[in-house]
Image (cartoon, rainbow over all chains, first blue to last red; front, side):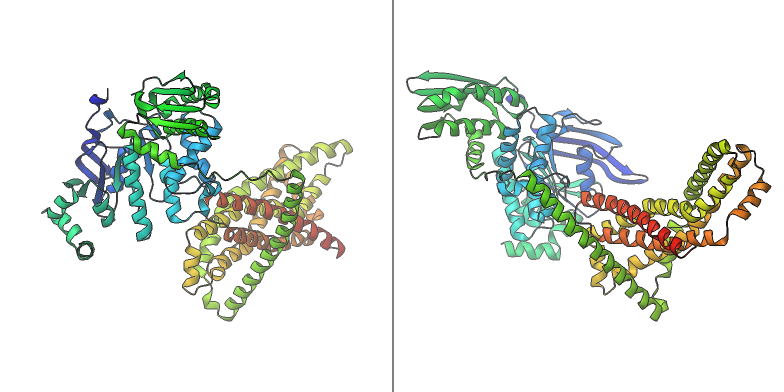
Length: 255
Length: 378
């Protein structure tokens, strides 16, 4: 059965999404391979988050097909939490639940298991994302930005989904915390054999953790490949993105 | 991928061989729990345990943790546990799981329930004192803002004041009229129904007139305004606090009390007497309609009886209370709004508190006024 596993975790074909008269994604096609970390870059308001939200079914599409793990996506799906985990930009932790209950929420809703095992799994997940067991009884309003993201990641991974969506995982973190978070995603991706789809503006994340980078401009994917290839791309927007003043400075420092 | 999980236990001498097979994943969690429980006793009795993982087809964190828990149980109290045949693709996960749940903090001892109650009582007593302090602080801050406006009348936020008046005054008129109309009608109907037995039907008009003008008109309207506008104030200010808008105002050198709270409270103080007046008239009108259709009393007689029964004093007693009730509602709503902390839950809690507290205070205030007016003979 494992030999039959598809090469691609997500396949998007001719996707069209728009609001009113404005078309945001215009016949966009994108493949995400199994077990890779794909970074998605694009202008602010250019449709990165729209693409992610369309794939996970939060925004209706006007045309095209989306396949996740070989299954076409249509309408609301039962057991979505077992297919993918999503880390929203602001964490989106349930503010009336403690950290522990937040992580247990997908377990409680999808599985039948004893409270003891559920507690142990929740603590295990929290420790895997670098938090301590003492933090488990805090409420989301008592957490710092970095901790919120870690808890949200633990919740996204609660059911060991094969695909992980990250919406700007390092935004709002200091460079040290962002670096730690990148390393954490790398480690978890290796141990849990995850496919990671990451929307980000962080050039450091793109260079250090992403296997491939896709550039979204004018509603289409204009370039896709390893970071090295993207730096050589001739597309004007991609050039402007990676060879602008800010990016040049960063890349120079990195050398 | 979803093959049934199995756990084969074969003892050989002192050593227990455990051989998990199939998919050890979250989807099979109930089976996994049963399996690990079934071998628990054997594990406790054997001196050494070998866990042979070569038969495991699929593994996730949950399955890995169940296996790790078994091996920890086997290794406890000086015995030994060995893990063999771990496939390469699972070794990372098994290593990771070996690190977790090592430092589980001992659960805090359950506190004595009596002490807990006493603690709650003490806390709410101190909390009540704080409530009074907050109320007085807000009153003081508002007075300072009013003095500031009196000194420099141009600093009054006129646009904001007019907008708030529109929202809590003008837009509230339909619902206030509807409800007070119904209440006036109900009181009149009850009056006719019960007074008829004594042949005292005509006194119904006295009751409706005095009750509505002195007490009910203003009280019902104040309660409705507390529910309708007070809660809106708390929610607005609370979400502004959550999104740091109030901090932004302060850092720009602007006083939030002056910019946000004064126009809101002032709008309430202006609008509530007007709404109370409109509401009282609607209630009298409702009573009049019932008099005509239920009590067989024509409009001319109703108005004439009303003329005899009530004086301007009754109206004054009612309407004088309105601005004070408005002040209480405004202060409670705004100070509860400023108390909102980061979470959505806290916003909901403070909004509830605001409405409950302001309705309570409005009724208490009404009682105090009743005593006061009675003692000065009004």
